[in-house]
Length: 387
Ligand SMILES: [Mg+2]
Image (tube, helix red, strand yellow):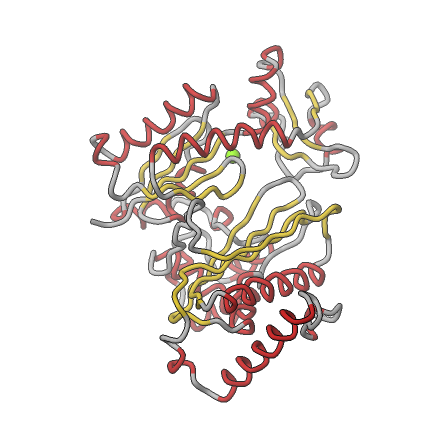
């Protein structure tokens, strides 16, 4: 019947792996992160968290709070290796999975959980297999969409399982402070509080026009997400039904302007490839990985598929509207187009002067780029003056 999504999140992933590899560390507060370049905590184990240490905190501050802590460098290759084993386990459990980052994934369990008797039993099976095969613990949240699943797993960490069925959505979201809402930063929280939005549920109850005026279009998306009207679909990590491009930077980026320039360039690239394949896309996803490896993905789906760079760029701009840069910086950016179909079917819906002009411009740029190489022609916005 209705959809059921599981969110799997490894508990203090990097720190757990360090303890697995060196059992002597088991009863010590372990803090991973803070090589000389990136001076922030990537992961703190739960013992370290008791001292007030958390990810994204400057290592210097962590050392003051927890001088007896064991501070270790990030071993990305090792974590990646375990992550790919995690992915295999999850793939064996569900045909549709989305790895969000090394230690987090969404599984579509709608049609398969019954094999285990109930959604809870299936959730326990996931934890059990991960625990047996990787010797690591995780938390599992299950809900009718990604938002609820993720909030559920957050609320039962570590080593927990929580199921929130759709009829319990309201009660669950009324208990969660607005700070816990996904995809909003401190600034937005402040603005929400001024509007007396204190819990996540409050967000859905406020007048939409008022909300739009104060916070902009993205707040409306958030509101719809809280109500479950606007859902982030699972982006199948195995599917070729998407076109994406991402860039990892040698040095973390700390400038919003630069982030926008790169996102625009990526948007141009993927939409160029989309047109080359004769396809249109309805969904745009951006991926932002911070300096501490935490990863944010945001998705927007339009009402009809398009193939025009400018339309995708508008969606990307909407998705980064309230993104807040902090001391972690950004180490990777990505843009993905999905929900693809053959071009030409929906064209008439968009027929307007602007659309035609945008399309002609795209065609011209594509043509020149294919004749003279990828970066021959770039739009003004890829140049340093993007707003
Ligand atoms: Mg985690």
